[in-house]
View (cartoon, rainbow, N blue to C red):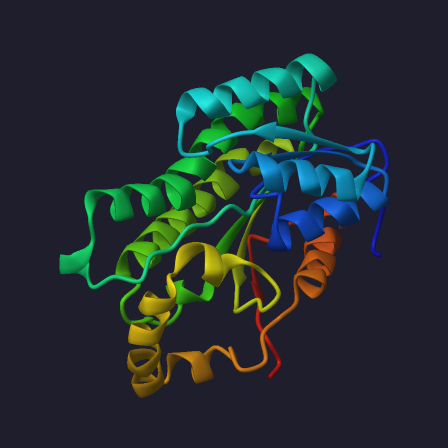
Length: 253
């Protein structure tokens, strides 16, 4: 580990599963109080129980402004400040654009782009109260290479990239470091099962294979959540005089 999180307050959206939960667990083990934001209460409660007394779960729909405001009001009431925000919540749909429903578009854009905008908006005053801190926004390698049938997901993540770049420039002089994490395939998460039906995956696989996308991004040997969380932890505990605006995390396979 490159540093300590002792005494820090950290909020992790999408904190009940996958990379979000792994990052929250590692921060808690290093001394942070972690607040997990997620929609599904059953998973949220299970994650809090797994992490222990250093974790608090607040059921939150990050795509709903009122839900996010209420969550951060609770955080302010309990802690009065914030040191770390990790935006790891993500939603995707396998759709050709002409097949995409209004709900498909809404849920992808609200979770992947509008959600981080809402959480950053609420977090900035609390980060200022702490004298500075860190925001990590987790994007996708899809912003570097086109993946067939995933245009709405790609658009939402490209938007997140642009928003993060703007926040990096806007907040850096206040001691708030904003980092974009462009993440490759992660294998030990429920992302595919939660977002794609079996029928969707069966239909998409030959299209992806023909395009070669999965081979190009190393999906045959994906990353683990633990490996990713270790890198996120190093980013969050790096020297205060170091700023990294974009970090790419890819499989070596």
